[in-house]
Length: 539
Image 1: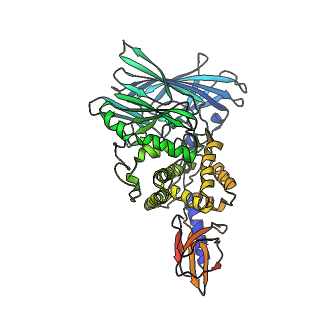
Image 2 (image 1 turned 90 degrees about the vertical axis):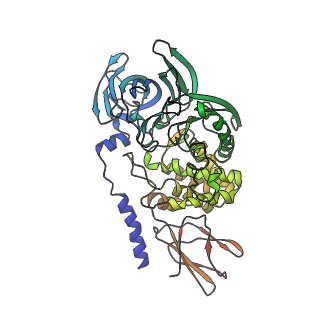
């Protein structure tokens, strides 16, 4: 009977997963539509004016693309209340049809395969204001303590089209990008990449900052940060040479920031050790103060943690280790490897971003304080796991999965102990960032790579932990010098090895869903606490 019950429980998980309902607008936002798939992004030039007085934007985006196959309708996205005033190609104004945020542009010019063409999208309006950034995205319009405007963008999930017109799907990253941002002349704009120059318009009393990103960048990684900033620079001698590290903070916070940001160099050392070279040496690394908690904008990490350790002064792990570093500096910078270097093609696979990056916090702790400290920090995060839906969401509708942070980190910590070879594990983490350097990926790409490099059959592991919300139950009993055990609450192919701690040291078991046994004289069974499982003693 127990086998039947646990099997039904597993099917129940899958049934709940399939109950989502979605609209055509969800599909237009989240899928690679026919109007998207035929062209490949090459270059953007986003040229806009930010008007704090009216909380509005006005400008244009030049979209340069390569033709992959003939087509004459192109999809570009922009969310209300912003509006597109016109779209041109080669100076000719084009017609377009709007359906929600999707704008279907009718091209007059013949689109020949491999040709590189461009359109210019002109737009204006008052963008959506963020209610709870960065989780609820849009524009944040604040004032600093001196009364100066303090403005920033954040848009993961919601989409970059909430503030600028673009091809708003993660599968296609633009190869390079120029951002020209006009702001009142007493303010500074800090965006991604390197500052190429500043133009002053004395008549309008504005300045235009030109920032260039040399590397591929995902849409939500593009950002504006506008305020009364001061900056300073230091250099990090890393695996690929000299990395420029720049800090931009509000004028009144310069002194405290110079002291507080000193762990940035240690962070870069730690993450290069674990993940390989920082992925954007050409564009530099910036830490930029923002009027919200923070976000992983590529080469322009935003920071708003109040210059305290932990997460707003709290230890999310409740182990004490989380108060020895600034959560936002470590977590959001970890995304440079997992989100900005390796990027999900579909938000359904957002675990690739958040699970690896949450796990990077424990690797940072390990680098500084030792392995036991790192794994303790990771385990301490389990109290926030909900196990209410799978970690992978439904595809093609811009829907993320669940439990991507603490559970994802603990799944990766479990996987490390399954592989049971720390040097191989480090080689896998570094290898991921080399194999998928500046690429968009599917979950299967990551799973297959780890499976191949580990030399183990990990498909049942990934299917259970990513595609259901079941937690494997290690069921056991001891009798007459035997340890009898099996996995329950899992699909029939689940075969994860498990280490138990005995008086004589570590003993590796190979449970399946059928009963197995080993000779065992120990008085108690202690599964390695680094495995994210449940335990049941007795029949």
